[in-house]
Length: 143
Length: 255
Ligand code: HEM
Ligand code: SF4
Ligand code: FES
Image (tube, each protein chain N blue to C red):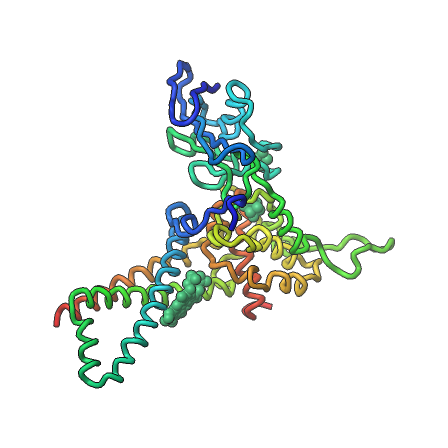
């Protein structure tokens, strides 16, 4: 990436402010994907503690029983639900499903691919994720 | 009518009689001389119908003829005048000041294109990638024989591609695209939409050739369907739609 090309760079790629909910979903999808990848690696490490016997296992698991642990797990739940819901929407979109039909364009040229079906998909993934996080918190903190 | 203020930051109030005015901030940058870009500020009066391009030309005519801006048709047809207007890629000739709903209008060169000077960016790469996808009807019998007539198409067949044929190569889509922001080799929404324009044309037989061209590591797979290209396109091309249809062919959802 050279300065000459005047590329917007990572800051521009990650700036969700200018292009509607679809660009926010794009950012959340990246963040949740990377977050889940991080969790997945940590999860392998965590479960490998079984090799340290029962004590080691219980020791490590105790980390998830703290307030920070609960919040961390609630975030994982949220990322999981959003990533799955939005992932299904994107996979359909990538296959050309629900992205509208070509037509003679008319002013003001509303793009058919940025339609209410996809918006509903995004908003409902966010709402589901929030509900799942609240339910998870209720279970974890309710103990 | 515009009134000059001096460079960077300082703003001189003006004595214009017109009802409304805005502060027009123009990015100035000459890559051969300057380390970084600066803003020149001008107070410009406007009417309901004044476009951003008209305001810039006003400044050029009355105050600073050195402002580099490219334009030709002034009617959203030639694709020359794309720039960032208040942070978003838009055509200067197709954006009215009144619709921006702001007292300050900032114009900068489009992102993801090399700056030639001030508001003018280089389109070599845009035209290269456009050409790369073979933007013409491909078929064995391209040359018509004397007793043949033109290739007929029904209105329905035309409708399959006509929206994509509206592209004026203004580059706004490539400027808005988040993949373009970081990947200098990405073929980009403009060229991908044109690949679909020809694939969807009933006269064309070049589908496999074009799918082969875009099926590479910096090709279509770098699109994440963020949709920003379609949101900024001034001609209703909807590149995101065309790209997902192309991907549908490659994934076997469509044939
Ligand atoms: C049912 C579960 C899942 C579905 C439906 C799903 C779907 C998707 C889709 C469609 C994408 C591509 C999005 C795009 O084109 O921008 C994606 C990206 C990604 N996913 Fe998942 N995924 C799932 C689970 C996971 C899990 C468990 C992990 C981590 C171990 C994960 C990690 C990632 C990463 C790192 C990305 C790349 C993000 C990016 O570059 O934007 N996903 N996922
Ligand atoms: S697809 Fe739209 S935004 Fe992109 S170059 Fe063509 S006219 Fe401009
Ligand atoms: S001057 Fe031709 S598109 Fe704006």
